[in-house]
Length: 422
Image (tube, rainbow, N blue to C red; front, side, top):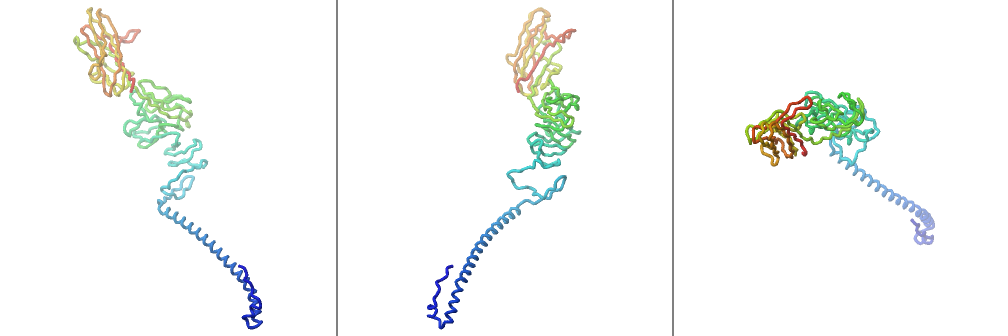
């Protein structure tokens, strides 16, 4: 603040009565300007302090608003549930359901004790690992597990081929001709007690199993392909099964060990093709001339799957729909010197199949002629085919021959059926 222009003594004498008063006013005006400056400075400082206080107050209000919002969020959060202290860590009280998060980071080097229902990072496999009951570890992205109930009366052992039977019924895989390859699930990863649940590996690694082959009476090496055994349900084998047994490649041996062995499971379920062969081992003579005779068989051959012998036994019944190649062959013999004609053909569901007949003529006595024909037949489940025979004389017949010392027996008729398409 600038000082005002000072008054002169002559100015004071104009309104003061004596010299003493003049001197007093001169002294007063010497003091007032500097005092006023001090007062002005103090006023300015007060103004600055007031501005600073306003800023501080505004900041405090903003902080209080933030705290209020946090308290409001926490008031609506779920109730907290104290967690039990176990093993190698002491968890703090955590919400029963946490808020959504963009991501979660796991400590890749932290020590961890395996325990059921625990999730942690597996440094060896570079992935998250879930700990299941029985010490089973599921490494996310490296294998798939299916949980099943053991509905049998005994324990389903670890390292066995498992299949479902029906509904929620599970058991060892039956890989003989009586089994169904489409029912296979995978390899058991732990022992599963009766009435308990367990895990089956359907794809990926199975670890810590015996891959030496010794439990199954075999010797396995790295790279062996493993199949369900056709002789003992549930067992595994490195010997490829052949028809009529089921051939299902299940796994490949990666590490050979009695304790830390490892498979790579990749069950390959091929569409099973049905097939059958039936041979008539006795003669067949027409009951009357020009009368169709359905040939009967005593049984299907040992290399048959997907077919049954129906009632009457002339019917060969398909269990599954598909396209089939049907081949028939027969051996006819003349019982007289006259000329005779014979026919053979195929029926489906009791109806003659067009253009399926074979016609033969024979004249000389005891002459033998064979003939065959193949055709393609589309069949639904439970459809059946029959081989038919007829002749214009009863002195001609289908002839069979017994085995000799150097040759096997000769059937009088053979039907062979092979599925060519699902």
